[in-house]
Length: 267
Image 1 (cartoon, rainbow, N blue to C red):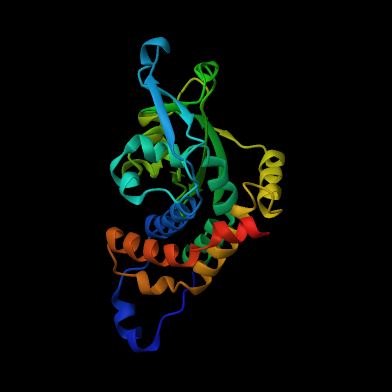
Image 2 (tube, rainbow, N blue to C red):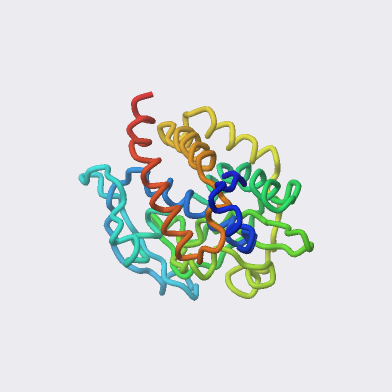
């Protein structure tokens, strides 16, 4: 993601507003989402909802993985229309989001906004809108969730959440919130917000970079994302609406991530 501007549009580009923090982070979010959607998954069978047994304010779905189904790319139509299916596809990727995207976010916020080391990997207990579990023993387990805390140039803190849809929440409303908004929305205030120990974070990054995590998919996907950001002219996004940015980055990312899963399996 570069700051170069094409010469024919230099005069026009000079009149356009600079990319905002929100726009820059949106680019990273869409790239990561498409990487998740490039990982092949099996279908699942939802056995029943067991809200009455959990004493919670949200429904808990007991599921089993359909091992008879083929591994395949997630169904795009269901991702956009079925919140339970989307939660199934996105589940358990919040640590991966932080491990993979933190370096990209740090680099580009420094490049575009002059923010030095603006992110921290944070953990908190999330209050889901729905939750999927594979056995009843998990009903009382702690729902830990990872986000990137972003400090902007004014000292304001923003919570960058790439995987909030794993809990059935609308990602378009919750992917970027202030700390105060998060606390009012879906943070369990009894435990608060805590920094992920660097040793744990480094260990997960090593697993990802080593190519042994999920058949090496995230090592391959990270290299593909590096190519996406290298080829993307960030200046060309100036003046775009968020919907325009999403559509453009989603299309580019889909193209660049084609075959990443197969490449990982072939290693």
